[in-house]
Structure formats: structure tokens, C-alpha cells
Image (tube, rainbow, N blue to C red; front, side):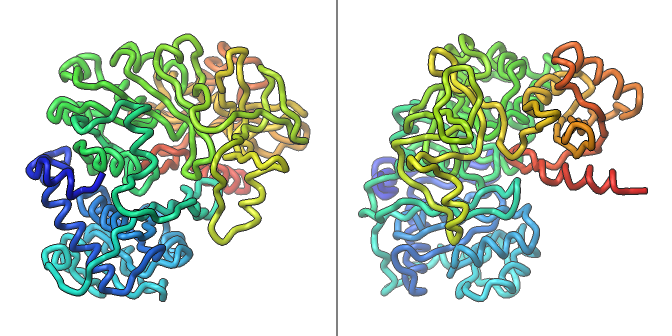
Amino acid sequence: MRLSDIAGNDPDKLAIVMADGSRAVTFAELDARTRRLADFFAARGLRRADHIAILMGNRPEFLEVCLAAQRSGLYYTPVNWHLTEGEAAYVTDDCGAQVFVIGDDNAEIGRRVLAKCPTVATALAAGGEVPDFSSYDDVVAADRSGGSHEALEGFYFFYSSGTTGRPKGIKPTHSFPPYGNGMPIEVALHHGFGVTADSVYLCPAPLYHAAPLGWSLGVQRIGGTVVIMESFDPVACLVAIERHRITHAQFVPTMFVRMLELPAGVRARYDLSSLRVVVHAGAPCPVPVKRQMIDWLGPVLMEYYAGSEGGGMTAINSADWLAHPGSVGKPSVGTLHIVDDDGNELPAGETGNVYFGDTEMFTYHNDPEKTAAARNAKGWQTLGDLGYVDADGYLYLSDRRSDLIISGGVNIYPQEIESALIMHPDVADIAVIGVDDDEMGQSVHAVVQPHEGVTGDDELAEALLAHCRSQLAGYKCPRALTFMAELPRTPAGKLLRRRVRESISSARALP
């Protein structure tokens, strides 16, 4: 749907609200501001399939920039402001951004990135003056003649999170139809998750990630309201749900864990009855955590498994999950295949590589080798995960292929061990990795972040190992355990296992 149509029907309806009530944008304001910004891009010479990059925190301008590009046939790439200067500059330069938009809260890294990106011809800063950047606020306040944009549907151009290496650009399959044709996610949100113009969606995660941004834009294009948290806090999240009468919300499992750690009296203090759908994705959710969330919120949880690349998707509701605990559902996009390393399909119950067929093909920008590695001879595509299906056709993920531990010739899946340890009352976060072992090839090593006030010592280590032995086969239990003050995760909850490995390798190399 066009923003102008929504604004025409209900101009004063709120399109964007900051969860703390500090700012709000109506649909009439959003339509006007994005139109002026799109005209500015056209006046600066941008045409269909040209590129802009956005580096800013969760704020209304983030969605404005995306919607301006969306209505004027441009690609737009969100840049993770938690990246290093070099990583953020790589993404901005690699996508060929001609316009670079930042928030004044990211001025320092924004200026350093701009200095490394010669293709950027126009730089804008929202919220305040930043040297080397023009004023975003002046642009969206000014009507201009001669800069009318071509009304085409643009598209997001995401980069992978870079949890296992340098971020990869995911080039979408997109034909730039006339503006108003809509986005594919609008159909999925409406038919798969019940989003309507009456929906109020809570976004507690960073907008530079695919799911939070895609859902926010899709909800707005349907005519619903998006409530943005600047950053996730468990109590503030419950306050926002009650205050704004949230109908749809999306989380990652680490957010569930933090909410469940709140005292029962605190959780009971808030009216969460407006929730119709609580979605989670992006990382494996331990079975006990999800079961507790369903017990608390009711059968409103929905989970999906997909990637920024597209190329296949599964989904599962609460009722089906309770009947198949641990599953990520059945295919809703594409045909699911579990295959061995030789490409042979495996029967139910056997773990193999997860592939999807009968989907649109994705490519990695400027990386034909990674593109080729993501598909097999039959044209099926993979996100690099391992899993199996049960007799009813439900998919269960075992782990990332790159995270698999092979010890003494036996496959060990970190996710299973992490799920066992995360529910220990002294564990705040957990990562399990494989380390080199002269005898076994690899051995299981657990890296634990204790809860605040809990001392990571030999006594706790023995208690955790005993906890593991009570729940898992002996060969799966960690051979060693290390304590870390804080495990490296993205703000969206994805574990940076590569950095965990680097930290452990450095520690083991010390004399």
C-alpha cells in the first residue's frame, strides 16, 4: 500500500512511536517526509537500483530513510553501528552507496566510515550538526521543485551479520515494479501472522537487522503502527506492551531468557493481554525457555526459520510446537531437503545438511564462490545449517555446519549442550565450542558467563559439569570450562562464536 493512501484515509494515525513516548510520527508526516527525502535523492542524481547506506540507532529517521528509498526505486543497506570502523566502511563501500545517512548519536564512527568511502557523494546526519555531513532535518523540511522521484518499489539490500567472518552482501531478486505494488513481506505478515491496519508492532531489536526492519516496514505498509525501543530492556519491554497495547512483537531467545529472569511478581505486574502474536527467530531457543514463555503468555508464540537470503522458510505455532518440542516447523516457503555430504537425501530422523528447493535463487554480492557454495548440483540452496525431520515432516535444527564438533569421529552439536546449561540458575549465558585435541581431534569446551554476583570458580565449574552429566551422555559433556565476564553477542542476540574461539585460543596460547 502507498503511504499517501494510508495518510489520506487516516492522516493523524501514528505510524512510528518511540516506546518511551519521546517521539511520534503520524502517517501524514511520514508520507510528507519520505516524499521530500525521495525527491532529494532524485535531485542528487540517484536513479533506479542506485544505493544508499544507513548507519544509525533505533529512531524514526531510520524507517523514514528506508521508506524514502522504498518509494523511489533505490536499494538501501542498513549498516550495523556495532561493527568496527573497517567492517562498517567495507559494507558501505562494497554496496556502492552514493548516499550515506547517519544519526548524530553515531557521529564518531560515521565520520570515520565516510572518510574511507570515496563512492559516497552525499552524506546526511539526522538529529544534530555533524562535521562533513549535511542536515537531514533540513532536507525533510524543504519542499523542492525539479527533484521529483520516479515512483518505483525499492528494496532492502542486507548484509549478513558477519558472525563467522566478513559480512556478505545478499543481492535480492527484484524487478523494481511501480510503487504501490507492495513488498513480499506484506503478504507474509498479513496471511501468516495476522497483521492488519489495526496491529501495533513492537520492535525491541536493532533495525539494522533484517527481521526487525523487514517487519517494521511491512507493518507500516499495511497501515499498522510500529513502536520502537531504543534498546532492549526486559522491564521497559513489558511497560511498552502494556502502554501501547502491543498486538505483535518479535524477539530473540536471549530476550526471552532476560524476561524470564525477572521476579514473578514483576512479570505479573503488567497487562500483556493485548498480545496476539509473539514471534521469535534468529537463534535457537532452548526447549525449557520456550515452554516457560508459552506457560506465561499463552499459545501466542510463533517461530520461523529463515535467513536474510530468503531461499526457504519454515514456521510453527505454539500448538504444533508443544506436540513437536524443539522443532522449527514445516516449510512455508520452498521444499525442504535433508541431504548428506554427497547430496543424497536422508530419511526421517537422520541429521544432514538443510537445503531448500523450489525457491527464488539468491546471490552474494561480489562473491561468486560463496554463492556457489550455498547451492548444490540440483539447484537447492542452504544457509549452512544441519538438521533432521521427524516422521511428521517437522524440521529440527542441530547446529551450524561450521559449529559442529567432531570428537573421536563422533558428531557433537553445541546447541544441545548450551540448551542444557542455560537453565542452570547460575548461568547467564553460554557458548560451547570445539577446541583442538591431540587425542580426539576436537574436545568440547564450554564458555560460561555467570550471573551477576556469582563467582566463576572451581566449585561452580564442578557444579556445572555435574549438571551436564545429569542431562547428557558423557561424550557430550565439556572436557573443560572457562568463565567469561560477558559473551560476545550481537544486539540481535546472535552469538559471535568466532570471537569466543579467538578468546579461548589466545588464552590457551599463554605460557
